[in-house]
Length: 153
Image (tube, rainbow, N blue to C red):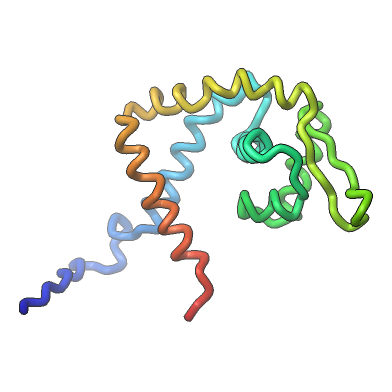
């Protein structure tokens, strides 16, 4: 039985060899593609992510939304305040648990979903990549996220 070993890079600290660099640049670049597509909707990319979660799940607690988006509540709170000021969401205390804050879409927030349906195809077109490539990439990135957020053994 022959074991194969990876050949180490000549320079393990070379910038182009770093996964973190590739992920950071890819993230910034893709998010930048969203900016002009989301602008007519009056949304920033982080606000768009909040709206995606609400369009999918309906009314949710801030705690659950924080977990879904992997954002701490201190980061999420100003996003929700801006979405509330824009008339897209309401935030109300849960009558059964005063500590819990529920976020719910307004009729305007629900109506915005129809306009947002144009966002994914517009971004795919701007990327100029085949949709099958992007569909392959998503589960791989999800595995990277899971590996990076898994507690140390």
